[in-house]
Length: 421
Image 1: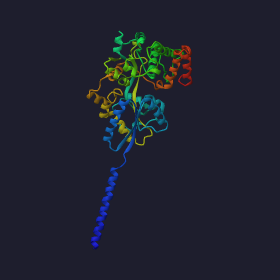
Image 2: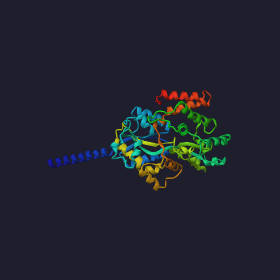
Image 3: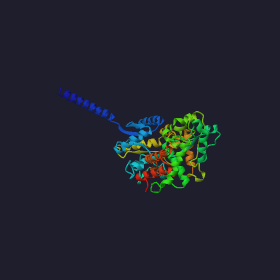
Image 4: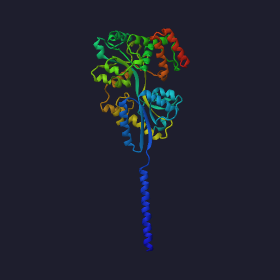
């Protein structure tokens, strides 16, 4: 009986051990996943393919959960501004080029990606490309694709009026005379597009850059007046709609016979127009003043990916970042929606799948073939610069000030804001 008792006790102990080990195994298998966050801006199509890609990433890494946050640009910019100030931004985020200067002037605003270079393959990028994402010697972000403002013309509409695509600045005003009685604008653009377009005109006219080497505005009131006068004339002669009334849908309806837009927006802006049979052509960035080849046109990264300086999971964030930049499935899902990818693996995948085609690809080729474009200084993209510019333009358009008064006022606003040295 004594032996039987100890045998039973041993069996019970073994059973307890098995249950205990089993419970431990269950606990281990139910170990909480590492949760990281990803944020981006864009249209519905971008959101759909990014979510699909995240699902693939989670299948490849079942121990990582990715929480997504996204919206259209204006909402994303406003929310991200608050989050970065309050240190609550996403672990991995899509950022605008100008944010590096705004939020990380000393290089400490985002995570140093050189610390995770064993995870993020940086060998697919030249030092020049990585330089776009470097602040004060610190690699803050990696560019996805390059970008530039480009002129797109619906040749089908121009042909209807017996007009060739514009090759000089004056051609736009000639087209306006032919089209305005029918309520058609030969060109259009959102606020930043026409701000840069007006700057291009001024730089080609004066032969002088808008900013000096210290990123300060180099223009006098009279030179600012060239920009104000040009945009005001575009509006007054119905060559473009005022930026306050710009609606992208009017491109598809044929109310706009052309537009100034980023290379990265080509498909978003003109996809529907092409589908209806219209022949949309992309003009060189040198158009309108061939003798000023490349002057006044600027290139920049279309968008970049960065990791939050506050991330608690830098390794997992780096794994997601590398996936977004170089994974084949991600590249195929994204196509050229964000522009032609710089990453060699992503570019190779698109080439093999026959996805290097369409209006966005054509616009990218135009950008690459143009005489080397100047690098866009982030200061130029500051909204208070172009908001003040349009305020001055509206003074002239609505007869509240003459050109000289409006130019002097704009100069003073820029000076008070610290933009003039």
